[in-house]
Length: 158
Image 1 (cartoon, helix red, strand yellow):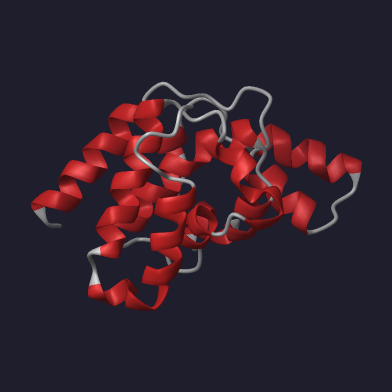
Image 2: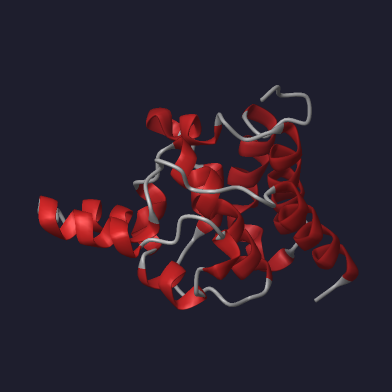
């Protein structure tokens, strides 16, 4: 891991320290939405969800529940986002694509990020700038540039 990647990793961990799930959509609960699970199954998933420490969520679960990124509400996104960002920076995600969810802002998708604090937004912005500087992600550079310009601006208020 480069020094710059480590700096962004530390920004994420600091900015999201202490964030809890509360009443937000949980990781397995989001998977249940994607699977059209019945009420009983959803309750079981919710009971299984980590709610207090996003860093305790196994990366294998993040990958297994990659579609949950599409079903998180504001609180669910705020809680799970740092887990996905950290796992992505550490190169441990296999299927989950957090970058897509940070750059796709159509159909109200951006509203899921409205409760992020200024420090949390800055950590996400640093993550996006890091990916923008990486030739491996060249294919998505245009989407990152638009997202940085239109949504993840440095002066946007939380």
